[in-house]
Length: 433
Image (cartoon, rainbow, N blue to C red; front, side, top):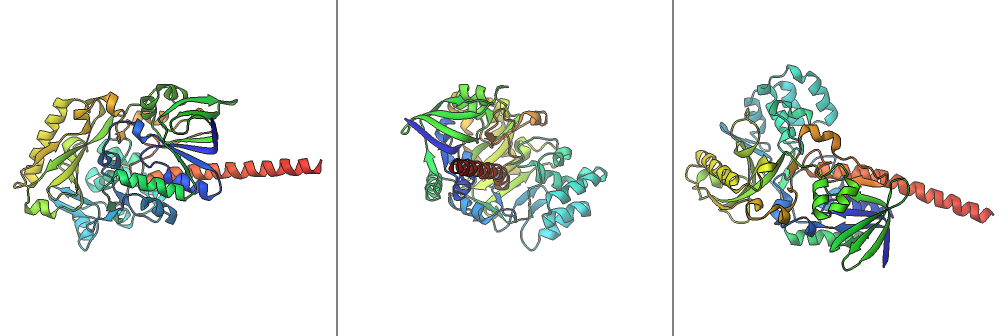
């Protein structure tokens, strides 16, 4: 059986859903192939991650519609919250400006952070930032690094990605499998064909290094003809799903990350500090030490008042090392006790990597790559292949996902218009003859 669509999007965990809906809105027949089930045994909490959503002016109405087509987001009244040893900084509320002034940041950095200025302004600041000490600019570097997809030393973090708008409205959500199903229904209501194959078996190629089709196995199986393909998986995810496809699309091999985020489920007894925690808190122990391991942890409330997800960034090579994960949990507990002496922290479950093997989990859900890997990321050797996913995004925030999708949408929209124009000219010429 031969299937077909001008544009096919290979997606996982909701990636590219807005792009698919936008292309369908423009009249371009679009098929989204979801392969989430082929990428490992992951609960929805690990898929969602600890990064939340910063609302900003660049998010369009259609993108907001996409966000709320899934599980609902809940605004954190306190805004993004950073808990330092000297006390918390809540980025929303009457004391926000007072708190940031107490940090004694450079005036240019302070003004930039409070006003959530554009990236152009940010670059202008960086030209003169060499004269700023780390103590006067650390929060600016932190805004780049904490959710970044590229690791950089603290004082060089502003060289990578872009600063997240920490003082914008900040929202989080509890992700569920039902939410992902709901987003599939939303896609179908927008005219997108959704497929969930058992396997992507192979790829066919045409002249000029272009992909012409995919061989699918599943409810709808056979050769799927296409003209443009959007691949939303990282190279490591691709190799894990199908090594043959990995060699086609990423012939240099899977790009392994330097760091990755892991999640512990922790029980905390009721106490003043625990009960005062907002929905989402980043706990920073020492701002001058590397922002990794238990030195930078994200505490996020769950549906149960005494249970929290605690996220930390660890070396990827250690993610399946049980002894290492256990040691990190002990150090994590020590820090939690030092901040909340009556909370009696107890590890209820370790990261997924503690219980499963690489063959069962595959690539980490939130990899963080080394600086020297920049040249390899986001490079496609097929002329009609567009890339998305963790290797392409500058950071793990919805604004980055949407910006990548928007870039692809513009290129595909222009391609579609040129295609229709050529067809009209050919038809007119045929009629004249």
